[in-house]
Image 1 (spheres, rainbow, N blue to C red):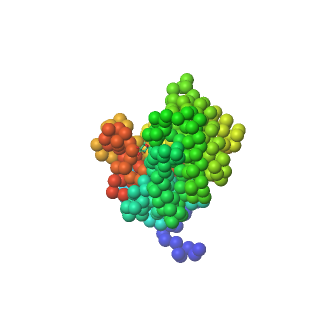
Image 2 (cartoon, rainbow, N blue to C red; image 1 turned 135 degrees about the horizontal axis):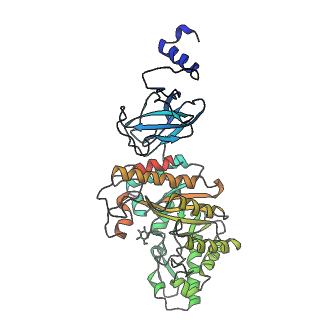
Image 3 (cartoon, rainbow, N blue to C red; image 1 turned 180 degrees about the vertical axis):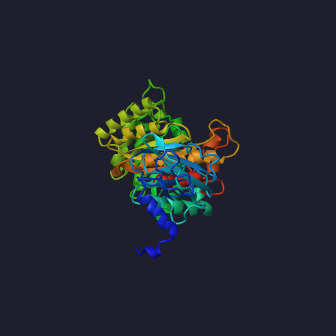
Length: 460
Ligand code: 9MR
């Protein structure tokens, strides 16, 4: 490069940098203070998103650490939470939890031999204003794992739902339409099961037409019981035969179309001292009913991936221990392929470490892993009447952590993350909690992407 092409100021900076270790250079910024320690040169931000960016700076010879300030005003009269004099021992720092479409400023100091330098130059950075159009949940997870959503057959016929289902998701799970009480509608006078396949057929066709995976949910669940089984007047053997028939018929009808199923849901009791939840299945078929159901399923179609699905698995270590012991037993007979941890969590509970530890325990087993039924409560304490920006950010951060934990699972064990619903006002949690406001999903009531949607993408 010819000197003539370098501006005066660039030349000046180059000279300063060259003699950095020997003397101090003055500039617009208070760069070296009176201490003599050399101030770093802050570099442009990278990885800019809606809610975060990465601050970067250069190395200062013999610096033991750096100190970063981030502010929403160029005079640094106040600081972004957690970024006031933050000590860092690397040359960049991710700054998260920010507002979208906002200008931030950062500056950094070096600590050399216990002496803090003056401030570096100040870098300004503007967070993004909108979600990138060319990235979807589906495109961002392609060839990695399924990203699923709980749907209803009725909503697949509503264009605003259909548009997002097909654009964003690579897998669907029926929130209710594939439960036993929806399909098994009665028993005729010959003793044969009466079926209503209509919604399942429609969902399977929908998935096929749109190249979407179907995860079946759920064959056996005590909370979705046909009336005739609840008050069944036949013998225990007849009851068991009906269960076998049901599983076989479902698998036969949807062979090659539904490739994975939650075979049994929530069979383990919450009471630490009790193994099996007291259900009609336990009473009629005995303590090995779970194993029997998995065996019926395996025999009906050996190509279907068989899952066990349960809740509170991330923080209730005792329950998880019972479930994982059962999984070991099923694995010993090659009767199970995957485990679903239902992710009905809160923005502040359980801890990230708890989720990580619970996941690690599952990774140690030879099973596919499903983070099923994901929704993130923000109003369990009922302290909100609307979703605040701050809480939306915290929720987004939580979703990001969950996705990061899932994404770090060895590739051959990642099955899917499934959101338990599309948009906030459809959540099961509102009726469940007698109308308490809640905003647990990735889309708002008007089908707009939330910060939590962005958090999902950032977790990848
Ligand atoms: O979200 C589902 C809700 O619409 C139903 O009324 C309820 C009872 O069938 O089931 C809800 O989904 C549950 C899931 O099937 C199994 N794990 C717990 C979920 C929340 O209750």
